[in-house]
Image (cartoon, rainbow, N blue to C red; front, side):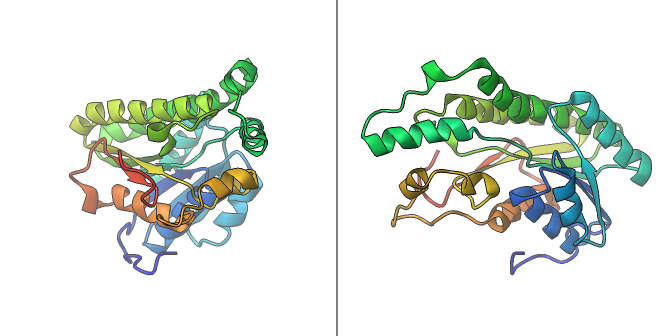
Length: 266
């Protein structure tokens, strides 16, 4: 938890966090609870992981959820409103990478040749990344807007990626999925601000999550630039997400906050 956590910033709020079983989502859920939320619903495709984090929080409630399943997302959000009366804050941190593509890139680096991924990328790998990252974001945004618009209030924060701006070689499907996430979120933000709903995006660079732990060492080493900060912690990214979700960011709508430790600017 951040040392400068603002106690009470989310006092009485009803929050839903996707991807809350680990990494950035878990860090967001913990900080949201510490800052006064009345209920934090932790959703994750790994229901046991979400339940383990929820047990740490007196206000935590866990639900298994695959964001690629639109009907399941609708049901989960409706259940929150049915049980707790409303949904005030949503942080969408669920997403996937492609370990096989990462290994192909790593192998090419070790062998001193350019990566060859696109022509070897199967339809199933493409669809998996798009289905979870992009379709999942649409499902979550749609469900949240449906319950927030009638009460004309709500804050939504989506976890994107800095790879949208530097488009890593050999990772076209992930970069494309996250570029879609950014554009989708900004388009929705411009629409729903008229209904009192704010949507913003955090675009992290390398962050110490389970996803990063599965990254081959040669790729991780490529981020070890002494001129910039090392991998961010999930708590550091959570700090930014919670700022965007708070009243302190009332004038931020459709923002994409790049949080990559100084590797590049956009």
